[in-house]
Length: 249
Image 1 (cartoon, rainbow, N blue to C red):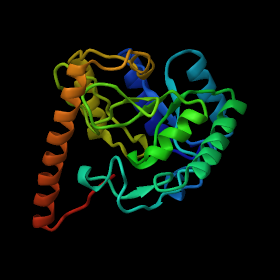
Image 2: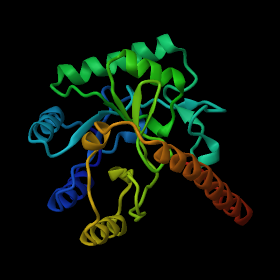
Image 3: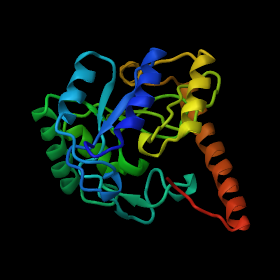
Image 4: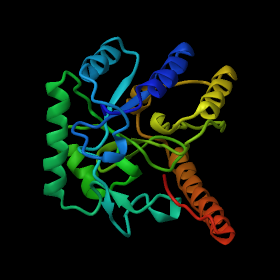
């Protein structure tokens, strides 16, 4: 969004680029979420995004359409059991409605010189209709899913997203979701320390182009999904008992 906190955005991006990390930027085509309105409108927003993309410093993903989240209890894919608030822009809506809005967002990005086949669902929430609609609209990959390795579902490659802070796990593809609007000096310090440890870096575009996972990868994904769900449930239960239960992001 052109109303984001630009200072924090540049601080995080500069740090990543310094260590030759190629981030995936989620761009909201037509932001209508007042929570993302943190600064005055910047007229060169699209110019900056095009430059970063054209210089191949970043990958671009369509981050929803208008980022308008509504309560959607019982999300089918990633929901309450992972600590994500049951809010979504798309999950629970009809296939036709999702196609219409996804395509509207896609057209805006294309008109601004940012065509992309990648999608980043707001609030990590989507359902089977979302995947079907993404396929219809020409998208090929999605940044989300609780797994260890990329997997295919409904014709869409899902590159998993499991973390919100730097961490290290062996033999896996991990994605760290960073909300630069909410980052502080401590968050930047954690990222800097992590990058200085020289982790093996990849990019979303590279992982999205990989062949579907092997049988061993699928088994590992299923086991990790169950373990992650159990760990999150225990963590949230502990927070609830302490009186500070606040699920989601």
